[in-house]
Image 1 (tube, one colour):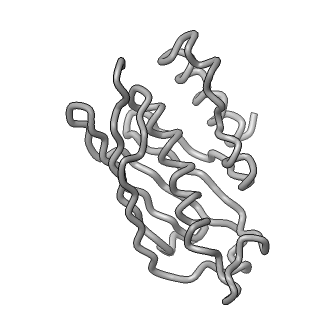
Image 2: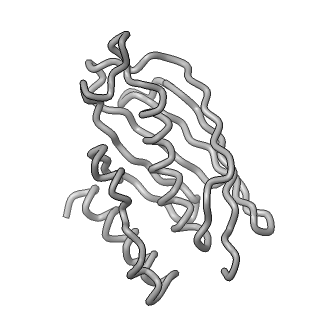
Image 3: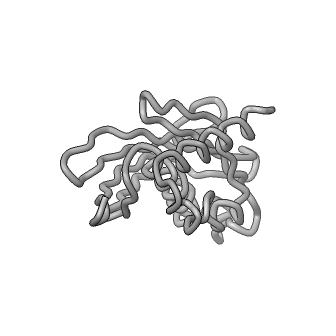
Length: 152
């Protein structure tokens, strides 16, 4: 089993263990993750870290020929969301802040999103994500706050 398949299988096992019968109502990965051709490539549950890869596609470019900022934010959200379900009860994004550092061009091929749980305090979760090239050059950074839903 390759890394991508292995990470996805581990994620599903964790979700089934955490959510039990409730997992049947969840679409995992989300349809938009699949539409964006995302792949989960690394998972470290003990450290609260998840890495996903997203290809840079021409249909996602802005008039300048670079990846649209909203697509980068969607890639971040589609990495933070699954990570949040793996490390905590079901929760929702309350705030997502993006800081862009460099333009993303087609020649990069894909971007990597490295997401990490920073803190869990009461019903609040704090996350950080870094968007990088395959060589580790930072393209963007994000901070997010999530709220654990009632009943969990």
